[in-house]
Length: 309
Image (tube, rainbow, N blue to C red; front, top):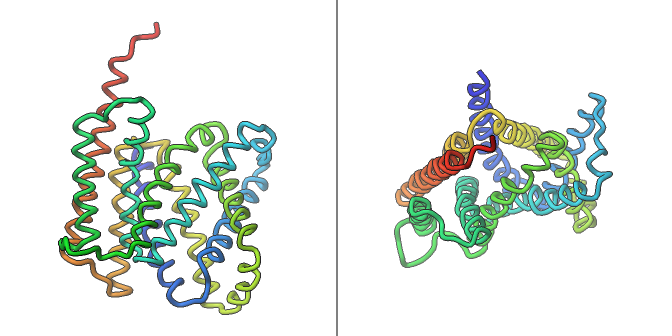
């Protein structure tokens, strides 16, 4: 029953997160709101809302901030992980489109494998190298649409796409211990609030100038809707990890680009080129391959571990 719950959570979370891409693309194209304004609003309201919810449930929300070791980790996660992945994702949408930005997230396993290999000072297993190669081939087709004469994307779009993959890898790896200690909602709440306030400090004057755009009820309503959908997606995605394996989480996350693609086609009429579509499928196959290979390697290591008794 718990496994079924986890599967439903990850599919729902992935679909909702995939839907936020086209919604953000529409907001960026149809309003004068800047990326910092959207993210400051999104992160501070969502983070503050989660913390208020926990406070109403009589939770001691400031406990992790009273210990330097946890405070430091939450700040790092809030600025580099939460703000980093959100900013890179929206910037990638702004410079390319929602589908491509979502697909760039699937470079995260490659960053994770490279990081682990460097840390352990040994080459990754052959099966993981093959999976990485397949993913990179898919990325090539996505970027070039099958033509070696030039990229379909601008240099800026490519930069933000690569940053999306890196920050998503960090976002996945870094907060594991914090969430085990303090729970998903409290960790995400503080990370969102810290990330939003950090961006506000850097862009306070811009934010104050753009508050006037909220007088457009249609745009304000869309922003609030995106905040709600995105927050629920984060909670469902992270919460699912308590019930299903990382392999299942990674494979079922493919609902993100599929949702973004369907909405983009129906709403904007945006279509990937035939080679780009092939590249997207190849990337998903490569990521699934990496996930299954990683799961088998982890299981093999556990089986080889000596019995502590």
